[in-house]
Image (cartoon, rainbow, N blue to C red):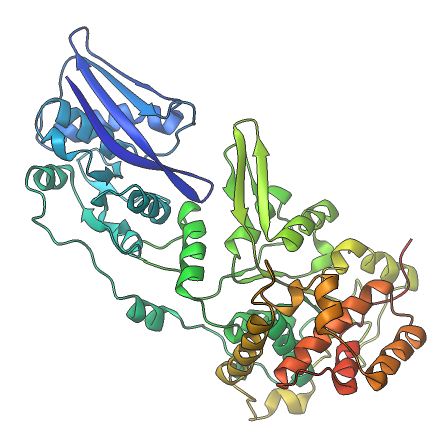
Length: 511
């Protein structure tokens, strides 16, 4: 007796269909699984056997062989429990075998026959739709996530008997439906706002420029000046996630197992803030079985690295590729896996080891050599990818106690969205360029022309401030963004002057 059930598995953040073939033959009772299963898949035989018995069905005392095709890709996780159990029941003719090829079946089984949530349901539902299937049968907690995919029926199940009843009488329950607009309106809220930040108008302006142009930013200031608070507010002034961006972000969080039970979408810009003891695999992804790292979990959001010089140097260096390419490729013996990683990098650091080099009220105890070594922990190539360096001074008593809350994030976000709209129109024919920070030299030459006064100002700054050559393009990019915020096509001297202020760490090239 043979039964075939359709299921799915995830490779990277994309899914592929898996044929679960179950053969029940005469012979000594046994249960074997083939098709490159990992330990969790091999252990499914014990869960499946107990679940079938405890759900009230007979388990065949025969030779059972389960094949997971394609057999040349390693299968992992517990999502094959439910399709294997359904395949056994189908081979025993407990369910109608002709219906098993119309649905993709996914889920982990508990020993009492209950169905538990799994990872990666959203990309699996996308693949099932692309394959032309009628629907997917998923754990009830995963149903809202899968229902984001339009054009395919999503049925949430709680127990094994429930899925047997469905397959013997299809169409009885209604598919899960969600209201995307309601989800976005309910979930697209942040816990912080720029009105929570006292003072620091100069730093707020720098963050607005960074958000408008997609520029990476470095905040430099003494402890307690508000650097972390400012960085946490950065996602609140970025444009709201589009549905396409939300689905791409949700796929990564789903694969990583970070999506809350019953949640449908990641509707706000991610904000990831790893500790400085993180490994390179934790930051960009990796492991024996590749998993997405923090740079991918921050996709379409913000990656915040606090106390930047405290990160291990080799960990910071692995950021260079995702910052340049917007993607991470992890190569292992089993093959290569790619994860998207388009994010804004926000970083913060003290000006010196003790932290008080720029604090007028406290004396710095660091020697010039200590400060030089501290700053040198950040390599030139990494610093080259950070467009804005801004000093964050300590707050004064009057600034802390004032009732003036400043502009809310919503008002700043409106200006950012208008500037981004100008950039989208400007780069509509440029492949891979979505904001000013992505401009290549040819785009800078075309879109960042300076008049005589602005050019003279930049030349003077390069000579008198000893700005490095790498600062030139960064200043032009930031000046272009400042002009966009002002709604002007022309870059003026005032825009260049403001952009020059945002290069506080530039100096002669290091040895």
